[in-house]
Image 1 (cartoon, rainbow, N blue to C red):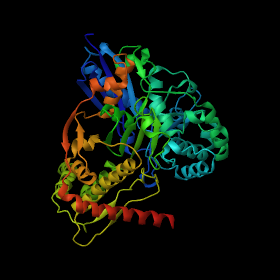
Image 2: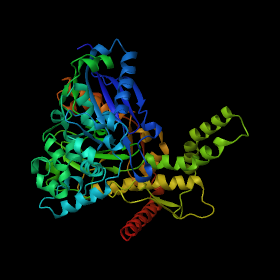
Image 3: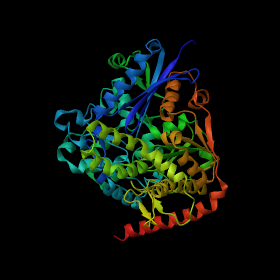
Image 4: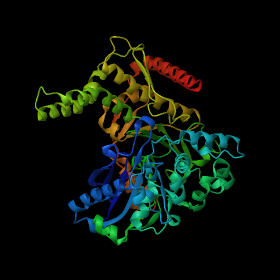
Amino acid sequence: MEHAYVIGLDYGTDSVRALLVDALTGREIDSEVALYPRWNKGLYSDPRVAHFRQHPKDYLEALRQSVRAVTGRHADLAPYVRALSVDTTASTPCLTDRAGVPLSLHEEYAENPDAMFVLWKDHTGQAECEEINALCARSEINYACHSGNYYSAECFWSKVLHLLRRDEALRRDAWSVVELCDWIPAVLTGCPDAASVKMGHCVCGSKLMWAEEWGGYPPEKFFAELDPVLLPVLHHLPNVNYGCDVAAGTLTGEWASELGLPAGIPVGVGCIDSHSGAVGAGIRYGTVVLNLGTSACYMAVMPPEAMGDKIVEGIFGQVDGSILPRMIGFESGLSAFGDVYAWFKRLLCWPLREILARTELVDAPTRDRLIAETEAGIMDALTQGAAALPLRADAPLATDWLNGRRSPFADSSLTGTLTGLDLSTSAPEIYYAFAEATAFATKHILDHMRDNGVRIDRLIGVGGIAQKSPFVMQLLADTTGMRIDVSDCKQAGAMGAVVHAATIAGLYPSVTEAQQALCAPASRSYVPDVSRQAVLNERYARYRAVGAFTERLKNNR
């Protein structure tokens, strides 16, 4: 075979990336990132109440822009593209009509955030999640067991129940609900209606409480007791799902023309972005992939025979076949990782926007350049300052729950803390405290998984922070006491989609064989500094104590 290329599409929180790869060698030919225009203007969201919505037009416009840019620059290669696969954030559901069209694409709902996709980090369904967990606890079967015995506000049914209760018109017009990772393939393949959507097993098992052992979704009586408003949606959801090594259909002629691709090529069943990132990083038994972005997702796999019937309490997702075929996939992580650093940057930049932006001491172009230069350099300056600090047991200490806690033991109502301040405390010390808190949270998760039988021999770091922040990566290595290899692939999520695309194109007989051929080796490693271990362990004990105090305080409100 002379030519064979595939495209992986990676839908993240802020943008979509299209990656064109030589499917025979793994060579990355080109990529393009397209921002979501409405989301990046701050529309339809309110961080004060963890309300985060995205308009489906953002996804479609970014799809066209990213893929067309790549195929336009490589018009000679585009005819040889053999397949396309997609990964997206999850759980990111949206109410649809009978045809599977998101309600926000209808004129009457075009500006209604509840008719849009509910982004993974939206926590407006916290009260509903607590009801679901209470019902699971008293049911004969705990349907949240594959979520570590805790169903999160970040998951599908919490969000859907919240939406349906809020708006009678939406409740009347909503025929079904679709996850983003299922909707994009459905659009590209011309799926005729909501009932025909090929749903991905990874999202159904990890976010929708679907399991073969109880016949698919929990039974109708479970949802009737929770709230009968869910029953129409339940009745209209397909009760079968598929692995990401299966095609959802073929690319329509209309979309082929828009994207500059051959019509009729297979489009893969959609995948959760963190799962896809693990595949793109080359995950295997004994490896934990640390996917470090706005949030952090830590992925592991175990053979079913090694785990037996054991459920790891407090781990967000543990589903057979969710990441690799014939392996139990484990998903854990932090609800905010890079978002913690971004919050601190916004905090420090407040005077730039509120004071310097109105100054008349300099002309407007100079003022704008000053603001832009300061914003661009502030994280580098904070990092340099934090890296130069001596390690002290009594330095300021933080907890990382600025967007709640995902694992272990999810609780989106928890908040972050900062303690140990005095009049000499500097900005780099506070930045260090929060960076250290994300590292301590990582240690807590890994220790918990290991203590419950999950084998951890190796850590691989992927994502923007793994590529761009040696300071954070070294802190993670020092805190966990493990070497961390950083994948040479700068877009592991898109590469996971590439692996799936190459598999559905028939270029490789399995996902694991496609991984072996396409996934890049580690480019660098971070080795723990053993001289820091004693003090870090002391500070970790304080981190756990402060966290426990925060939980008690919340529970006593």
